[in-house]
Image 1 (cartoon, rainbow, N blue to C red):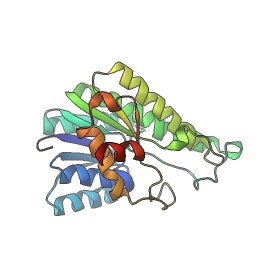
Image 2 (cartoon, helix red, strand yellow; image 1 turned 30 degrees about the vertical axis):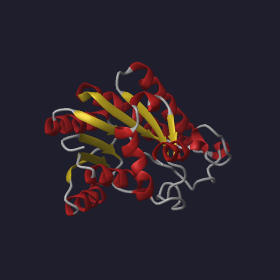
Image 3 (cartoon, rainbow, N blue to C red; image 1 turned 45 degrees about the vertical axis):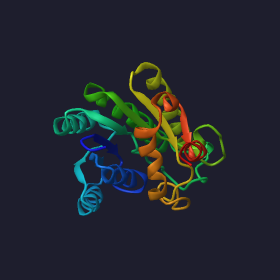
Length: 230
């Protein structure tokens, strides 16, 4: 990936930070954003300490003007954007303990605004700067397709994210993959599951090695990834 430019949103911790480190280790220049500037800079420092190339920029995916500036910065530094990982997301409450029947309107609004509209904004604002063979990767989870009690409007937002990804896949020349890494140990998921570092290669595989047509508009889960790489 030498010379490639990769944008990762929500890169201050968890999957986003791990994915940014993986792309940087593979030789890409990564442009990372998050709302927490201090935590974002900590991610950037780990990349620099490992010899990687990174630009950290505070941005809120709920604000399209922030995202516009983020993509302009990435393109100015790299000429074009080769990979976009629309990772930023929130979960208001504890996983499995936020039923729709008692979900607050504020939680509903922010789940949709951050998780769903944030993906829409990230992809839309990247379009003027994408390389012809660029790839877009959107994280999701089984909860988007397999309803379970207690996941409330977070699950609704993830279902919306997958619909957005499929819609962009149908309309864009660039490939758009949905990556479902299973349960990952992050603050958002309640710190139970796989280590983010262990699933980061799923994202780089979907963005580089996988045949574009094989992942375009498709869900790449652990089974798909392992079957393709073992």
